[in-house]
Length: 219
Image (tube, rainbow, N blue to C red; front, side, top):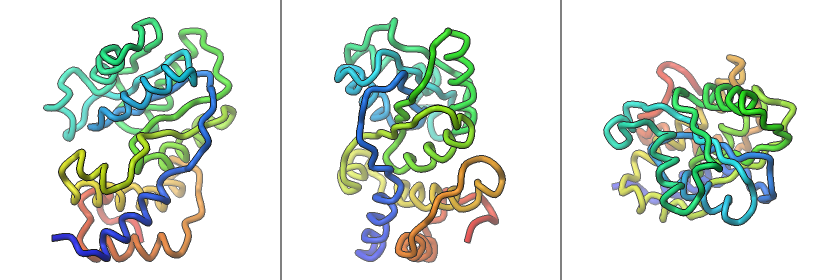
């Protein structure tokens, strides 16, 4: 049983991890691969709303997705988008990336090879990965404008859709840890973390939500 305090702390992290950007049309959308097909659903919805005319799905497989998406995350995302009515001509697939940095570097290379002029990127991720994706892209591709997007829903609904609160809480804690340590390693830009977010993060770690931490790191 997860305590009310842990749920409250998770909601603080959930809100912080989202960038709360106002959506607007961009040169291209990049959908970051993961276990969550909601990324592809959001990309398809934004395409239909005229926010982009081209989508890149990027991602290989991971231990989390190997069985669920055996053909690779980006390939399964593309198939989902096509099921939702996005034309094949509007989707590019980058099937090799295994982390967020590779998602950005390899997508950027793919777009350059395709001759696409990119001034702005609609960066689509899981809700609790928006800030991490933004910070990574800002570091690796500083000359483009970034608009962050994800499936818009409360944490309670997101947990309900996955059926695994502990996984989501572990992910929230792990994503914040990376925001703290990865700038020092040159993987992303540094961002301010409010005191209430740090306090919630500390309590969740002490409550045992440590399954997605980088071993031996963080504070």
